[in-house]
Image (cartoon, rainbow, N blue to C red):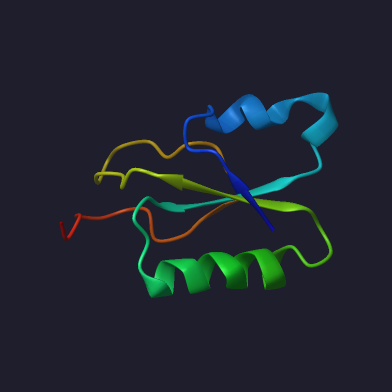
Length: 80
């Protein structure tokens, strides 16, 4: 599992050298269950594949999600 730098554009990952990488998104400042959910998605949804995890700001309801293979706990109101 690879952490994707938050400053990079989410779909900059589409470079030919990395097209085989799956992308799992979760919210920035993740709590324990967000980290566990990202790990579970990477381990059980994409076994044996190269998986990147990116941390993005929480999405508000109705806001389009960035393109990714799996979105984990990134929608909803921030508790901060």
